[in-house]
Image (cartoon, rainbow, N blue to C red; front, side):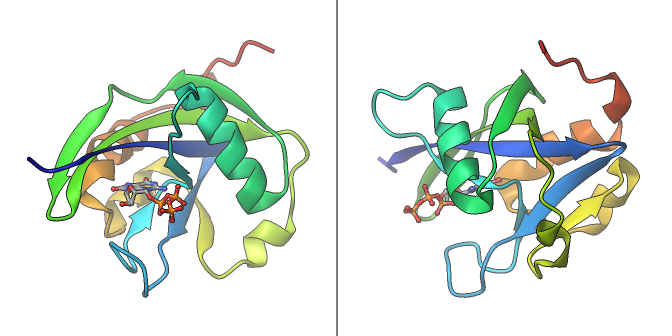
Length: 139
Ligand SMILES: Nc1nc2c([nH]c(=O)n2[C@H]2C[C@H](O)[C@@H](COP(=O)(O)OP(=O)(O)OP(=O)(O)O)O2)c(=O)[nH]1
């Protein structure tokens, strides 16, 4: 049986745009677009894992909002990735990020132009049709 890998991704929002990130060429699923995030560690909730991964990656705190869509399982040859994508916001927006070659801020209708990691397609399609200004955060 293929191993199960539990992964969280963040659809970071800024006005009417969402941050997308491209995997490095030398990694599994190299060059494909994804939502920044990573594997959930034992004893972590998906939200805790997402905060930890994003804080490591972008050196900024995030607020985690609602799930974009249900957890989606995709069977790759290396294992089955169970991906959950949450809407999120950065607390202090780090503009350096925009210059970073592997991330881009995109409007929802532009998401269909990207070559996504297969596990991300349902979430990307949901966001494509979403009105990002209506996503509700608790704070
Ligand atoms: N981060 C992330 N990974 C994704 C997405 N879609 C998708 O299929 N994956 C896959 C790629 C990897 O096999 C796995 C996540 O691993 P990762 O390498 O990004 O996470 P990590 O930093 O915790 O892992 P590691 O390098 O420490 O082993 O999930 C996505 O949207 N975001």
